[in-house]
Image 1: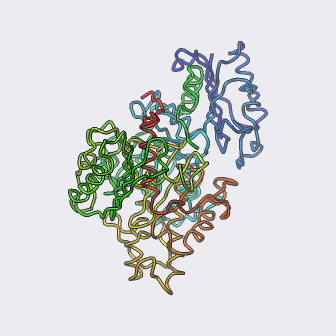
Image 2 (image 1 turned 45 degrees about the vertical axis):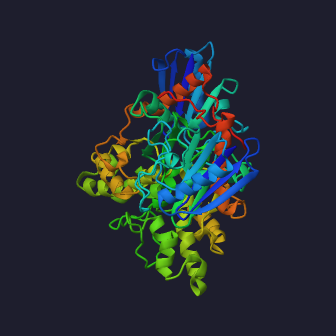
Image 3 (image 1 turned 60 degrees about the vertical axis):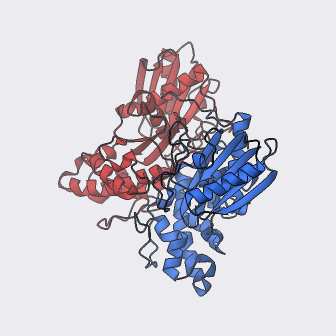
Length: 305
Length: 305
């Protein structure tokens, strides 16, 4: 038996599967994220009940910052998160899985893996998963594997060019009007006084602003990491019309720099919604656990450093 | 014998070395870049004279866009460059090296490899090389190897936030005031009426503007690709005081997003000048040729796609 666990800011998803076919989930649970002790204790209880014989491997996609360098003694430990009580939480210890082979990635990297194996990223080698929700983040796969097993990128804090008709000053505690401060869920709610799913008559302008900002991240990702496809997920990204507005804005931003790159054609399928809904991360975590069992989880690239 | 060749916009560098120690260059030449026929013909003549027995392998770091996907029939062929006459030039054929094992990368990726093996990037696994010169570009290594063997990133075209005191409209033919349009050599020359190395009394303001723009690329790179170190090269980057002004500006832009990341300390050595001067690219090309001979040149990462 293997487990995939996604620890999110509002909920934890845990799924169990056989090693042979991790796509076939045999048990799953959703647990509200409260304190580390209570939350992780409930996951532990779930594992004790449904995987009493122990786990062969676990994949963990965690909200961050989280230590993802398996050479670090803090592997799987939460860093300086603003989430009360979670800083310095050793997730693997809290789950009772310190002795179990574990693959720890960021939540967005886990989502990228899930969409790559089972969802909207099938068939490409280099994939980006961008989420615009409570926060903004990005995870990257190169040749089907996480770009880095060392670093925890924070693409959401990209400095963006402000929309000329946006009076909102930005809500990021670090930067004010970085991308996350202007485009994440809390910014949308603060700008309009209502959440993204309830914008009413303001929706057209909200879509215009959202597309303006999100396209800048997608352009930056396209010009640096250069994926073959971008999956755009997250609650804000589900605002009706947003994805469709992002695509031509991205083409406008890249214009010419990459020749006839698929990002230049809004209908090319370069930017797509996730196929797994809320399950991208937990499905990715399961896939990473399977890789560990199959022996494909260790970094295969060599280094001369 | 192996060869490293860097085809640049103004000059081509070619170096020959034995396979055992590619750091020991036995012959080298610098050729002005003119037409493809003349330029590549001179390189071919150099190879015929000094490597008459043929080459075991060649590394090619080319100005772009160039096809770097070895699965493509256009591998090593120049794409839609604005450089007159070079579009669709098959570099390997022009060099008479179509049958020789070849590693083709972009010029900036080649520079990253060179600095990683022999220069300012030694000792780290994940390295970025950013050049600010006639153009702006970036190359990335992950675990000591090029991030992508498929894509040709164009990080220079990042959309940046304009400096409030910069009246220059930007000179990029595609985007006007993208990073390259505001910070590359031609933009500096157009803004001040003089090249970067001859700014006189305008230098302080030029450094302020240059650091403002270049730091935005370094922040974007840090927040997405997340290297352990950035080598900042290129002619404009050599403007006295620029590197020193970039470091605190980068810290200001990242502020908080990455905790105690080395980019937050201007003295940490996170952003460093190249150690190999103009030879980063050709030395990197040689190193890639050596990898081919040693059998380490093929992608080692597996894919499930």
